Image 1 (cartoon, one colour):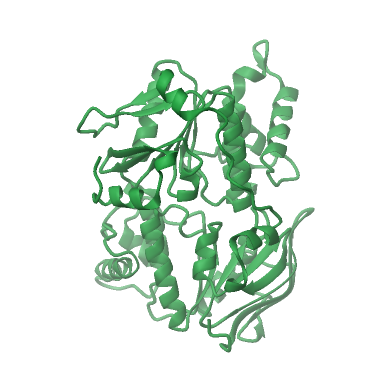
Image 2 (tube, rainbow, N blue to C red):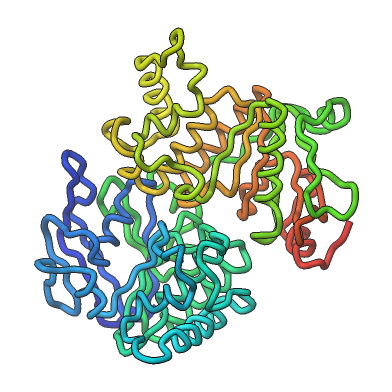
Length: 485
């Protein structure tokens, strides 16, 4: 970090309320030129709200927003932010799905105009994608709706770093690696360091502690709308960071059932051959087991989950699905939080031929407490929640149902570390009661909670191993065809 670099942006006493909810309270925070500032805290702590104020999409109610020493809070907007070189990549992606990659680039770079702008926009975005994500496999004329969520996130990030006749001083990255596999995430974080070493500023929001500790120069911790601690990143450890956030460092829980006995004497509850599997191997999941799907993103893990779900529907077997892409496959945007949770449990909530509203409200309130969903009223719209709290609601929907098979498609996107570990604990408890989980995840820590892990490559499972044999090296080697069974 350039500790003596000029202060580029500073909040002084910033506050923001939504009705009775104080989202920001007396926030003091600065960002210097040539530094990566990490912003971390539990879901609902105020991180995204603070960054929306900086990006100009929300207005603070009080306090100062100082940019290069001038208070610009009054009349501040997205346009003013861009004029001062500030851009934001929000967690909920903003690409237009019906346009191609080059056309989406033009939307954020109005200086690209006149004859041949599509060609120039395409050349710029392809060059930036190659600079940040070598080997990305994205073309300028690809329609965004046809891209995986990981590739959409790559386009959104690369677009923010393109500079056409404008200042580019500070970029806010809100959970930028949430849909990226480990290799692509590492490419991005290396680019972040190059950008700040060249004098740029980054505000990085992430719930992956290793990313924060390894990439940021300073880390600011938020809790209940306030900055509660700011230190140099090297002054934190994994456990001390969790502690300051208001959580506790827990040891990983061990499964309560005997894995070897279950596999030796039981029958698989799920036995599915991946659609592109060239040999006869299948993915198996037994009663009370948590099975992990690993490998590079987009190599058939989500397709396997879809196959299992279809088979369960076809044969009348109860299964619930927890999506990682909540906006496309998860939330019912026009419904309340409670309705989004109880929709998977309607049979349990009937009184005669009709739904029992008291039972529906009781279920919603119960899961609000169990999942620590931050809202004053479960009748509020689902989109009133932060992204992480929306994801908690999707977990609650699946777990509140009577489904014995739970399918999870990289579902921890945007969920803070404290909540993640609470969810892990609930999953272990539910598995001990006999539920079966099949869990695609890009995070190694999450694989350590699985009884068995299958590694995918090119649409096939290429390696399977019990937790006792699990290692990051084996996963990476098999993902890149350096290890075969």
